[in-house]
Image 1: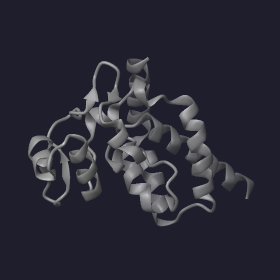
Image 2 (image 1 turned 45 degrees about the vertical axis):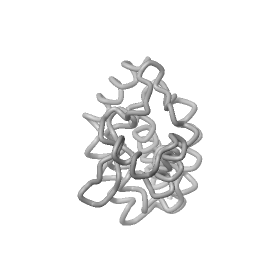
Image 3 (image 1 turned 90 degrees about the vertical axis):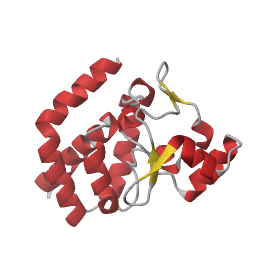
Image 4 (image 1 turned 60 degrees about the vertical axis):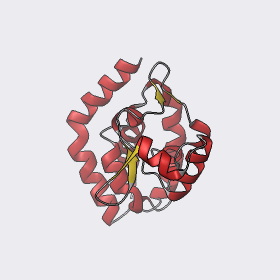
Length: 171
């Protein structure tokens, strides 16, 4: 199932990446009327089709940004100081953000694609892939990145394009 889902994702991405990114650019500048409600409805549909644990591409190919709250919570989970946690697991990017030193994520169990720190995981992970965030235009840039890695994001954008185009035909 994993390889099939990711193969389908890669195939779709090859064909649809540019038009999907164009659509997201357009929605970022001029969001369609009702896009936030459409996205919330599509979110429910997407999660009936996609099971994250069969993929875990986000944990394998991306890294979360660790906020100060994340650092405090997760380091306490390991009975470490924030500094000890950073030294052991993280690196500081040019932008000043703390991210994982390694990929896949050091907390991902590759046998079952489960997170070993799920109950205290970073906010970035808890919210990923940010499909139903209000004010779609503020997250369009995130979706442009995530379509490359996340079958759920790709599916959401595909469905959203269909709905927005259908509305234009009716209007």
